Every structure is written in structure tokens, then in C-alpha cells.
Amino acid sequence: MKLQFQKMAPYIPFSPMVKLSGVRVFMPFYHLVSDNPPPHVKHLYPICNTKEFSAQLQFMLKHFTPIGALDLARVVQTGARGRKPYLFLSFDDGFSELYSVVAPILLRHSVPATFFVNTGFVDNRELFYRCKVSLLVDAILSNPSLQSVYNVNSLLKLGYTDAASLNDIASQVDVVFDTYLATQKPYLNLSQLKALATQGFTIGGHSATHPDFSTLTPEQQIAEINQCMGWVNHHFPEQPQMFSFPFSDIGVEASLFTLLQNQSNPKVDLAFGTSGLKKGKHSMHLQRIPMEYSYKSAKKILGGELFYYLVKRFLYLA
Ligand SMILES: [Zn+2]
Image (cartoon, rainbow, N blue to C red):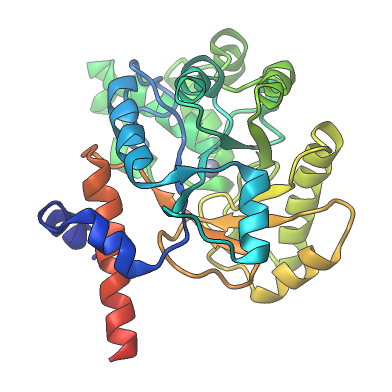
């Protein structure tokens, strides 16, 4: 549905849509930026290269004023509004390119950002199961004799609970996840995260092991959040405490936010979903805009979001 709106967006002037929407903060999010997409994400979603990302950033900076986590918390609390809408940028999954590629670009443009990490993956202790899938697909696609044995499309559908199948296939196609982790180091380590925090970036939590929250009970959801945010609060106590739901917040009840808001240890100041321009379930719950599409025009992606948002609002009002 949203794709149809994105197709039409380039023909609609962007600034009037921004004004009409009254949106105070735009919150686009990415995973990583790379000129050489690594095999552990290459088959999962399209990512921006440095040129495409810089062009998107320039478009956003023309229309929005960038703010960091501290200012975002203040804006949410006070309802403050800027001359232009604010821009709050974030990145999920804690990949090493955030340190080597993304942070230098953001620093050059003086743009703050929040990096949401899976605390179970920091220091390359474990590989996210979707990244394992991508690695297996990569091994199969690069070997014609394996392509007749394995169906890549069904492999891409394997889930969180299919760890055993992933390990079986890995041993058959000669992929060793631990070796990949040790040699390629796909994730940030703690000292890189500390260096990013010193540079002014915010480190947030993205769960411990990146499960699909819709498959967890409310108790399991709280346990995942607390395990992750306990680590974040411990290592980055001076920062606003932010949590982004892995995959999405589908299956999360509004009552969970009341629980989070009332607990002080570990603290969670703001939580984030991935539903685009949309109001969250609670005042501490904000929705971000996914930016990783096969086309790379920020005007098309953000314009499509705005157009869709305006049409929905018009229909609800009508
Ligand atoms: Zn994620």
C-alpha cells in the first residue's frame, strides 16, 4: 500500500506536505551504510552506499533540523516545535560499519544519531539468525552445485526457532558461524561503542538476541527489554535510555509501556517502533520510518510516508 504512495510522491511538492502534516519530528532509521554490502546482510534488505546515504542526508538536512536523543526526550516531554521539523536519526543492530562508515559521515555533517544494539551480539559473541540466513544464501548462490540442492526462498523464510536447521545447513555448505564472527567481526565491540558515545552518539538497546516480540509472552518481552537495558544502563548511564523493538512492536500491549515507564531499574525513557509516520501506543512510544528500499530517493521514501499519512488523516477526519 505504502509503495503506491511512494510511486506518486516524487510528483508532489515535499515542503507543503511537511507543513500540512504538522509532524514535529521525523525519525528515519537504517541498519548500515556500505560500499561493499557484507554477506551477512546482503540478501536481507537493500542498503545505501556512502554516496546514496550522503544524498539522503543532504535532502533531510535541507528540510529538517537534526537533534540527538537528549533533545528528542525534551521535545517529547514539552511538545516543543522547531522552525523546521526535527530530524532524529537512528540505526539498528549494532553493525561495525556504524563505527567505520556511518559515524565519520555523520560527524562531517554534525548530525547526531542513536545506535540501537543487541547486547547479546556486542563484541561478536553471537550472530543474529537472519544474518546466518544471509550468509547461507550467499554460500549457496556462489556455488552452482549447491543451488540445485537448496531452495534459497525457503531458506529466507526460516525463523528464530529454526536455529537447529540453520546449523545443519551451515555444516553442509561449509559455513562456520563462529569463524565468521571471529574473522569478519560484523558487530561493534564495547570499546568502539564507548568511542562512539564519546563522539556524542547515543547507544540504545535493541533487545538481547533480536527475537520476534509477537512470539513472546508479556513476561518474556519485559525480561528481554530488562536484560538488554540493564546492560545499556550499566555501560552508558549518562545517556537517555532508549529502546527500539527488534523487527517491530507488533504484539506488544500498551500496558507494557506503562510498566516500563514506572520502573526505575533499568530505566527506559523512550521506546521505538518501525511503523513509519504514525502515533505510538503510549506517550513514550515513538514510530520511526524505515529507509532501506531498492530505490534510494529520500524524497520518494519520506514523501511517500507523508502522502500516506496525510491521506489516512484526511480519511479519518472525513
Ligand atoms: Zn533489528
